[in-house]
Image 1 (cartoon, helix red, strand yellow):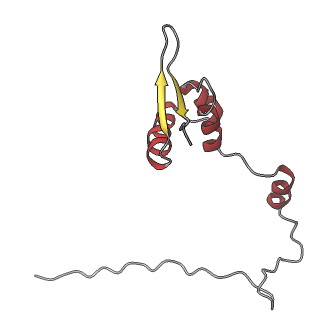
Image 2: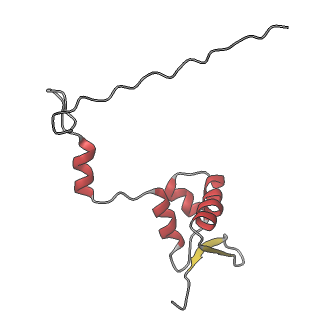
Image 3: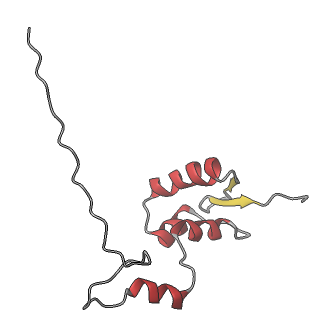
Length: 115
């Protein structure tokens, strides 16, 4: 019985960008300034989709899944996964839901009282 040896191709080597004597990256002569740097300075902090959902959940009346879907452009299963995985498990918030007659279920984060 013979064995066949397989060789795995090594990943391509990455090259580091050129640096000046002080260790700063140098830019090519004709390059334009980075638009992301200037726009982030003008806008301040960026608001993530997680921040949007958490702000909806912190409202007094909470939010429905459809409101969270509209705010993030996520599908329904992604919103539910975020509620279970991130809000409850990773962040450790107490998530409550309520449903009144004829309305959609509303989710909200219970604020911890007493401290």
